[in-house]
Length: 284
Image (cartoon, rainbow, N blue to C red; front, side):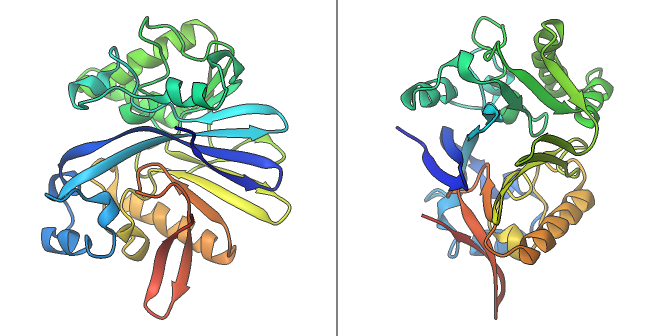
C-alpha cells in the first residue's frame, strides 16, 4: 500500500501507516477527559473510535523528500524486539511501506525522533538490534534523552526506550540537539515540550506553502476545539495544553498550513475557524 502524499512546493511528504489497531477503551487512553464528553465526541470524529468505543490507534511515520535528501520523521512501533510488543498486538510495517514506494533502508539520510515514546522510536533498530537506517543520522532533543536517563532507574518503559538509543550512540549516528534546529532552508525542527520534555515538530515551508508534522501535539481531533483536553500519555498536562494553544495560534496566523498528526484517522488536514469555533478539517 503506497502512502498518501502531498507536496509543499517541490518537497514531497508521504504518510506511511505503520500500524492500525484497537488500543483499548478510549476512556482509558484519555483518562483525564470527562468520559461522557469523550464518548459524545464520537459523533463528530468516528474515525478514532471502534464500534465498541476503543481508541482506534493509527501510528504513522513520514517520509520527506527534499533537496537535501530523504528525511524520515519517526519510526513507528518497530518489530519483535521493540518494547512496544509488551502492549501492541502487531508489529510495525514501516520497512514494507518504504519498500512499496521504492525506498531502501540505506536511502534515508536523516531520521528525526519527534519524542521518546516507544510508538515513535520503536523502529530505530531492526530485529537484529542494529540501526534500521545505518546511513542516517538520528536527531533527538536533549530534553528527551535526559528525561529517559532520569527515569530509567525506576521506569521500565523509559529504560527500554533508552536501550533503543544506545546502539545509535555507539555507532556515532545519534545527534542530540537542544531547542529549535534548522535542517535546511525549508525544514526546521521546533522544540514544543509538554507531551514529553523533548517533544518536537517539523515545520516545512517553501515560498508560501507550509506544512507542520505535529507529532503528538494532538492525539484526538477534539483537542483542536478543546486544547485543554489532555492525552493520557502527556507528561505535563498543562505544558501540553500550552503547546496546543501556541501551535493553534501559529496555524491561525498562517491560513492554509497543512497539519499532519501522527495518530488521527486522516493523515493531513487544516485548522479552520468558523462560527462554532476551531475545527480540524481533513484534506483528501
